[in-house]
Length: 313
Image 1 (spheres, rainbow, N blue to C red):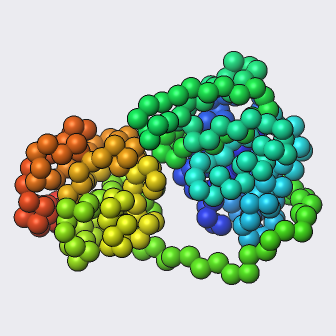
Image 2 (image 1 turned 60 degrees about the vertical axis):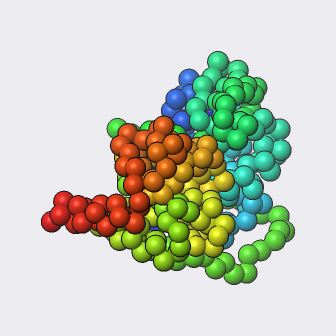
Image 3 (image 1 turned 90 degrees about the horizontal axis):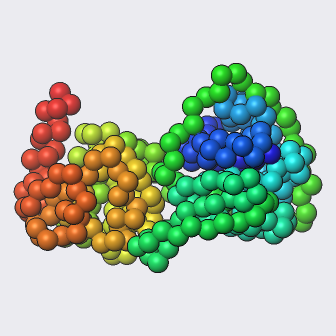
């Protein structure tokens, strides 16, 4: 049996949940697949998940804490008899998957790029050494593993809808979140966007990002930034693309004044098409770009905005 912990925003499944379902289906030889939706007001999301899975557990545990998520996932694994638990990789999952693996006495494979099974083990491939190499790891069942975002095709709905079951979870005394303040992000979600426009330090100033935002708005795209830009305080961390930021895989990635260091490439090199603008013809970004423009971004960007507006009209 395989259990998928389904990431959601309180209203709908996130893209990462559909990737996790795809990963579970790839190792479907290990048994049937069930899902669990954890949080508050989970019924609507669980009903959506039932379009993809035969059995979905709805665990009402309130606001997020690592202890609650680990306890709920463990309860779902116990009820379903799962020997493998699949979750979306990311900062939040890292806080509870280790707890779950400990409770299950299971191996833990994090941020896998791909996974397979020989019937007794889960074999996972992941980046290592600053994403410069990949390594293959093997863990004997039971196993908890996470799928690195934007590395797996999205699951398609099943031929018939499944059932939703309420899951009772016994929660031990733990830290309670009294208040959560989150940044109100405008526009398209970076990790789910089909087009991303990213600005680098070569733009010269935070004010220059007005052009990046205008191009992104015209294209219906998300705005991204490099680590240097975020470290300088020009843009929020939520927009950072790269090894220590978000991994994106859009149909179109436009890199403006981005040099393209290996750490940045690790977060965007799976994009379908990459367009780069940089005044340095030797910039590493041009080695992976499908289309490149060598020139001053302050002259090229207005022309790109005009062209995008004409295309939109």
